[in-house]
Length: 175
Image (tube, rainbow, N blue to C red; front, side, top):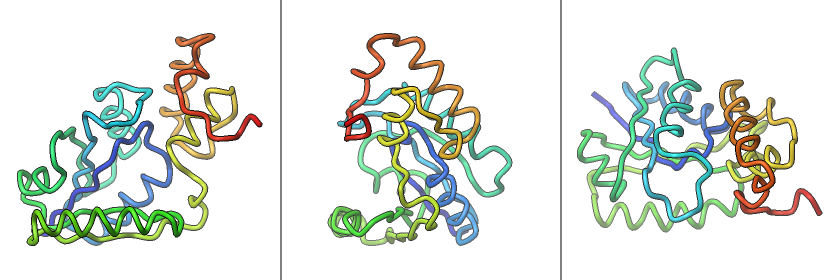
């Protein structure tokens, strides 16, 4: 069986993530979407919430499984008997980081290949941080995420109230 993992924080999962996962599922018998439990970056949603959003967003897609993980990504790949790590490349600047991570992962686990998929053109502008920022400012993200994720974002920022904009790192959308 050809099994791959597609690791990430998915805070939140967006249509670009879904596109990469579905395209990877066409290449492998099974793709495990691994939701990392302890990212260094500030997250808006808990691990359980991120896993649930990913499951809802990918529900009904054959060959896709969502599960949390911790520790080194290559150790997760080994634990689930995956022979590949799938990564998405949106813009040229992603390449340098992905290249370095691929080299490090290959050093740690030479039996695990890294497969990079170029994002579909309509998703090149998407990142979770952009989605969070737009949503925190009351913007419409319905063209960027699944409806259940859009609802979760609205609910979270309503819950945060005045602290909503402090809950996410701002890039420049309000300047």
